[in-house]
Image (cartoon, rainbow, N blue to C red; front, side, top):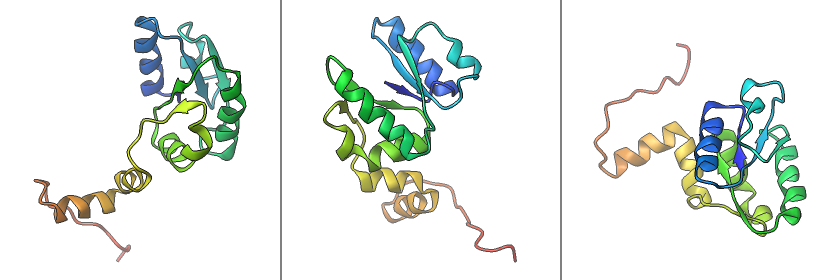
Length: 133
């Protein structure tokens, strides 16, 4: 399951999987996006990947699959939604993501920077603007 076919990461993931003989079902938000014209996917479903509709689409698809599918979320918003809803999806899909708190920290650039500082990672000095002044 490639989530985000209408994104460069999504189409590239679909192409790589298909090249290895792995059947691909994809989800995209924009049916008119040029990447959705690909022939490497067995099926393309359309749903708003930033909303509950996306999770509901996966829940409807899950029971129709012959076996558990691996989810490949290719954009930050779909990574967050899959992570936050993994308990609803794990029956039908392999959710290969770090623990939810790690995903949340990785998506929050300020939290990630603070974590890196606290753990002695070699990172460049960074300053965060807190207001317009």
